[in-house]
Image (cartoon, rainbow, N blue to C red; front, side, top):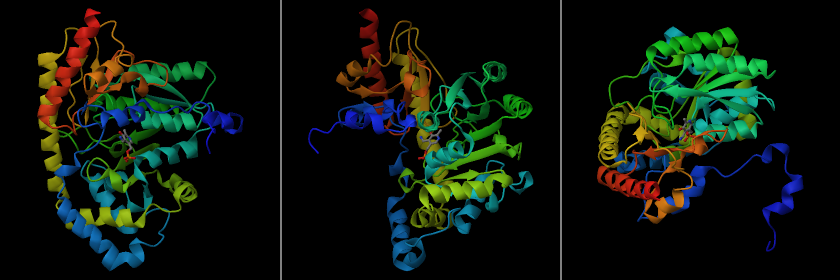
Amino acid sequence: MTGTTLDDYTDRYAQRVRGMTASEIRALFAVASRPEVVSLAGGAPYISALPLDAVGEVLGQLAAEHGATTLQYGIGQGTQELRERICEVMALSGIDASCGASPEDVVVTVGGQQALDLIARLFLDPGDVVLAEGPTYVGALGVFQAAEARVTHVPMDADGLIPEALEEAIAETARSGRRAKFLYTIPTYQNPAGVTLSEERRERVLDICERAGLLVVEDDPYGQLGFDGEPPAPLRSRRRDGVFYLSTFSKTFAPGLRVGWILAPHAVRDKLVIANEAQVLCPSPYAQAAVTAYLTTMPWRQQLKVYREVYRERRDAMLAALTDLMPEGTTWTTPGGGLFVWANLPEGLDAKAMVPRAIAARVAYVPGIGFYADGSGVANMRLNFSFPPPDRIREGVRRLAGVMEQEIAM
Ligand code: PMP
């Protein structure tokens, strides 16, 4: 196919392909994975903290002893066994039978990413508005863009989404004659900002959405990864109607298995299953069996503690390095859990323009503009602390601070 370029296809693409651009993060991966580069750019969990030999043994058995089911097609909703285990996991954070959570209303997905795509497929028409925190998860922006929806960002502070700003965004959407379908929110240990919606604001945000007739899509991959005590209970534990709860085993077990889920309002469950069948026929029975076995036969609660401890140490290493090394005028969030710190650069610095200099100095981060649909975030960067060990984190921040000092001096 020599001589063929993407441009040859331009007039054949569907409308929705026009706005598709490579994510800031994907473009960085190739350079960031070079061994000499300290990557603060990724979002990868620290898989080496898992007992990989024991996991390997379980996975081997799944094929050898249960291959007739694990290697066969399965059902679109996901296996009953896994959906029951998922309910046990959700009960840890207060989403249980008392608020109507049941295996019947769980739909297993190919990671949290496909869960987002299913929600978009079910609810978004071209031109619809999605309200989302600013900044928000880059993969969600990709999904909403592919659905030809518009994203209106709602600002946050240290206590998460600002309720008054949400009200204003809803009013503004109405004034523009558009329809806001849902609020997409990551209330706990937000990606990328690292902040958590406070207890008091959770009720207010739910009330505001209810009054405005907005659905709530609560994305919660990080809720089990708190370092400083328990986070406020999820939105779904407070309301059963109008709230979709999405989560994943990617951050607490293994992203390579690609298993996530949606707990849907009962009325929507059937439509979700039909859409799931249209997208993937069924989520991988083998991967589901692997997660089920992990949750049934291995000390997963203990493993969560291990992750929390490893990440707490790394978060502390990053905050200490930022305090010691960052140039004056730099500010950052203090995450109580999750994988990320969000930094605000001194006046005049452009995080995206600085990437090539940072790579030359052998450090990588994700520039903030990738987390906004509207070009904001020029002076921001996301820093990951889950993957590099503490001494590499400090070295990475040292290199980054050096690059910033040079930029300021220019
Ligand atoms: N939602 C959020 C907020 C995320 O940060 C991620 C992964 N980084 C996902 C969803 C999707 O994760 P996965 O598809 O691996 O479950």
